[in-house]
Image 1 (tube, helix red, strand yellow):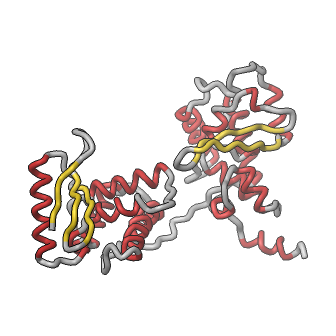
Image 2 (image 1 turned 120 degrees about the vertical axis):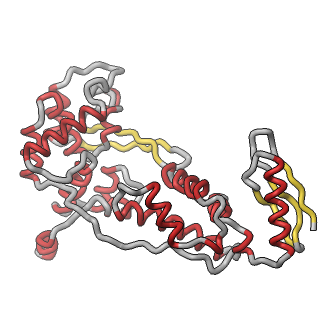
Image 3 (image 1 turned 180 degrees about the vertical axis):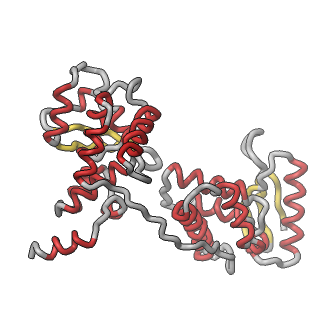
Length: 322
């Protein structure tokens, strides 16, 4: 039974490398100080000599680390950062001592103002970590977080009449910008980055960086007559943005959006919900789901489904098509 401490450079943590009980060990001590790393290794020796199970040897941070090294794993930047936060928060929590109380403290610290579905998505990620580590026989019998499956869904789209009232209420400076959002389903950031080179005779070409590693995705959205009218009213300046960022920054657009909603009595309708309105109204007109997905710049129908909200009367209309 022999272990030694090693590290790549002065800025990295010490790692234990060697063999314990006939099993190969390569594990980070998460300590940059050599003295603390030696203490960690001594505790590891003690646990191993007392025949403790793997779940007693590993911390939750170790499980997250193993999951992040899973072959073929592809995570978005947000999901990756969430796992890193979990790894840092539970770096000293042994897997066999992991409990609901620890999960509740985590939620209280990082999600005191978040809604139930946000918390549920994050805890599902943690469950995925535990499932992977158990399937790979790294550990067994680890506690899984318990969370309430609360339906906090809300109305995330406007009816056509509400949409037109919204645009009529908009300030003249922002009306064109908001019209393009409603009739193309693009993201606010995509529209702010739209240049005149991206405006063709019949379509607007949107560019969006997505995924991990980041990949550029390009799509062309045909121009609705109202979009064509807006674009035609603007002064074409080659090489410049269609909507100058100094006038259409996020803060100003959000402020104008909230003013309109307050004036019309529209509650709990976020700027991003304009994309939900685009997808929902197309679906209610029986547009092809694949076409909706491509127009919105989604890589799968599963993602598009989150943007489509149908009412009971829409199903009656679908049956009448037979």
